[in-house]
Image 1 (tube, rainbow, N blue to C red):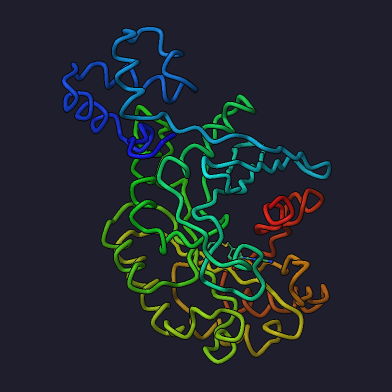
Image 2: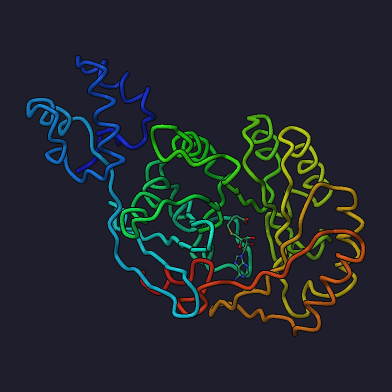
Length: 343
Ligand code: SAH
């Protein structure tokens, strides 16, 4: 039972030292325990340089926090792996690992489900179940490193959930994952993706931590965007672009615009031309992602000619754009679909 106990993996090393002090122990024990957390200790008894009396004391007031690996699927077409993790309350989350020649990137989930309601996305079908705690976000990376014996170098917060809707826990997670004695993943190697929760975008910019921002645009027209992204009722495209410009000013980081191309919905030259008008002169990049088919949804990918025509309009007008082909297409589909199958 974890009720009324604190999760030790929610602490930075300094916080863990303070915690040990608060229960009447020496602070160096905090550093020892911190090391164990990142060495993969599953129980307090694994911590063999910690006296038994302290292990028993810790057991009463705290828990380590370990996700259980329920399933690992390996792609045959590329080096992608998908993980399903079981949480203590039996909820399931999905994490993806992508291996490239020079880096290992993990796509992590932030919430169980999502309440943003994007019409093409599988994660949002049953709404938001709950936020993930910082350690539950962090442990996805730890478990994958343990499983693969590889160091995760890059992170994308592009799994299930809206990070800016779980902002406090996301901020804490970013601090944990960047900890020099912890996973030590550089902010410049982290990308946070949002559907455009404008006030939180400003708050994120004001933190001035140099993570990359990705913005899910999917249409440059408010009246069209709102049909596929209910969040567009609250935040207009112009306000989102202003927030992106503020982000660039504060952090000096390039903003990536995600654009999922859907046949007959947002894939015509009209949209491409409006994107050019909106983004001209901005430090940005556009990722064009032909939509991944979700069983429960009725959207299709545009034909190749439409996709490349769209890209050419952007490029000709000096908006850098790349067509992204999704990885791991043979292992349970993209964007939260694997989790749904196992619920
Ligand atoms: N909530 C955040 C991050 C999670 S989704 C956000 O909205 O940005 C990560 C990206 O995948 C977003 O750009 C999202 O719009 C996109 N996406 C979701 N379902 C998709 C699908 N079926 N096909 C293609 N992209 C999808």
